[in-house]
Image 1 (cartoon, rainbow, N blue to C red):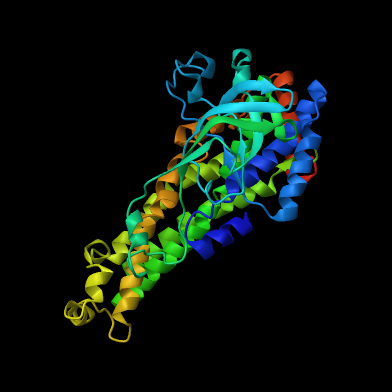
Image 2: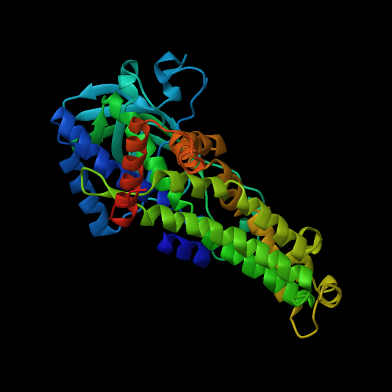
Length: 422
């Protein structure tokens, strides 16, 4: 979590590492439990692959989201089976897969892809229960690069209008046309009953990983504060209040991500998994707070953020001196510095890097309702009702009281390594 937040601070954008990392974490425990039940060899295969990835510091893209087609139908019910990635044929040496994965952030600048199912599967969906590792240059893969707001600015001369002059992200649709996966790189093949476990564990890790947005938020808060300083209004009470609100929201994201990791527990494999409730709370914050932080940043920045002339005009022999004069803020701050900070805020809240900070914050690792479903499943409402009834003097049966004591003792044992009886 801390390294993810730091990477967000250093890049000001999605740094495209967490999906692969979260896939590795989830697969470590799931392959172990598949082997335990089916006497397969997935876990050893996976550990060999993981060791190779670490030895060469390879970047891994986690390919989970299928294009899905008709969302009311299961994968095997689709009119075109390619709407979910699936095994198209089996040979003694491995399998071939067809289909497409959407919204693949960072896939083009990865070394490997790990393909995974995207939802719970039934026995009829066995062909879709495939997990495997594929080099990004494998024969049969097509990458269709996605568009981003203001993306062609990156092709223009100069760096001012780009906003973030050093870092940016990209997404692509990945199409698999009979792509081969050898046996030693297959980590699930037909074990449909483990698809849900894999998806749930992956999303638990991945929703916690959205703590990275707090690092990006730190950059935006810094940009807003700098814009206010360059405008000469840094000491205005309403500016300070907006910056406090932005910081409060941003640190709340960070706190829930850190807490989810701190409350982790061991799986059968020995690998730890974070607290699912807190991971979902972290991600649910991320579907909301970056939008408010961005709104406040735009409020502080002012309208020039979206109305300023282009860098070409600013460098123009005749227009340049006029813009230098009329677009200045504080006299002791170079006009170009002011313009660069405003372009950075535009980039993060409207431009290329808003893809990762806003819309991807909304839908990545599951849209808001996905987190609300998980929060509902785990909110222990009956337990909380019993806590209230006990304090209010409501007569509880002996069975209920014993169950309440066990729940409280279990919680304290897990969280504090001790037991307390109410």
